[in-house]
Length: 214
Image (cartoon, rainbow, N blue to C red; front, side):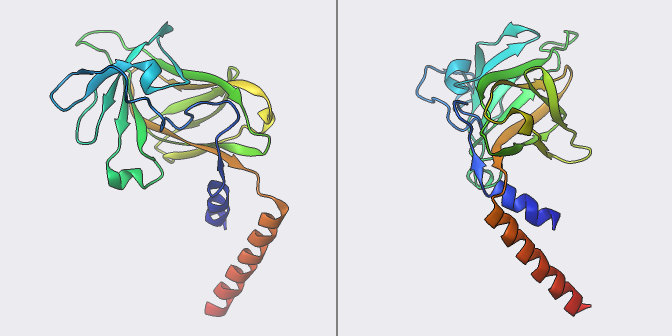
């Protein structure tokens, strides 16, 4: 029953209001890039690779980052990874982020990373669906709305219902000393009454079938 409810939520993604490039899948790959190795990865600007987002490293703006095409390996602290064709058909989509906050040089200091932008939360949003291989936290206007702890699950639905229809600052936080792969799947809708009715009918049918099999 829970899995059916999750499917119904995920079936109606909505990319809210004036949020730009919420899922990281709309980079500008026509910008100026410097090859770090033949065939990639490439060094580019944060404005091109993550339009709409501001990125800071221990409080300082991060204006450059890495683009890693399939079959190449990105470098720290932040890489826009283009997933291979098979992965791109899954929940990750075409692009995801690799965020590494371990020291840049041996013996160096760890740092944190913050990604943020201001946008409007959809008025019918139930939550913000995210996935991460590694620990990450989410904030709205400085208030924690959730986290992803991969020990428990790599998927999370962060509750944004108190902010429906409001302009807010969404922030993603990666603590020092971590290395994660992270992606935002998108906002999810509150099911309409007709959807609830369909869910009830489906649940009743499923229950009846299970009872018959017993």
